[in-house]
Length: 402
Image (cartoon, rainbow, N blue to C red; front, side, top):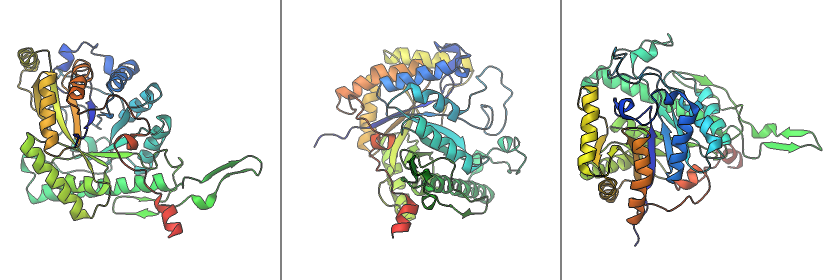
């Protein structure tokens, strides 16, 4: 039986995931605040036939601290809105999926639903969305609606932290549920557009979502007709059991952070167990492993470049995801090993942009194709089609015919 080809995504953030990336990048330090920069990155990802790109975002400035500004002036600070970036590059691309990140802790789900639905229209059915929990007090301070208690990432097992994290993910689940209901609030055939009779819309095919929960209530319907994909792809980043359960209930794709092939197999088993626990039906989550990548022509050159970046930053680089330093061929072998452990693909985080992105598209992708692990071109269709996800039925239409 031929080996299944993997899904390949890239995570874009500023000038790269290494905090000193701006010091060695071939791009101008001001480039992330320009549309041309993001358009060029998206074009490069599409030239490499990547499945999708994600765009990072948060409601606080980048920081080396978990909560709040760190006072550093030697690292990149400031960013553009991720949804706005995706909307800007959507008309300039044809195939690659566009998945911006947004906070669901301080953003109204009605606004999120319309923004992502609009992105699905302007991209021709290539939109995704990564809802993000905002646990930092500094972010809450921008809005004045709530006061989050301090959260120490080294003490997440304590009862107060468990309750807080549980509440934040329950709230995030409600937000995703509202967004999904709003995407369905127009049936596919709600728009008649009959000039002769003067009927533009069938009111019986628009639906109130009538969601009432602990954190918000939403009446509906949406102001945007049902998106081209029916439901744009929802992705979640997960490191442990609570976000695994969140992804199993609410997402289509989950990004996980294994340290090696054995750990990858363990995580996949945990994700599948979470799906069973929450009673998830088909299709199963697409599980993509995250890796920070720093690539060069030889292993020595890659190590030297990483050492130079660490020297410029004044500290050894660490990440929530594993960090790979080496050649494209070595990375291709590693991805093959991890795929055999059960992951469906990978989301690669370039250490330096655009340098490591071009190494991914121009060196890694050919190496994967040589191994029969990646397709040669785009098959066409929507992002859901690309990921092998069926277009879901409209819940309100199904209820009406039940």
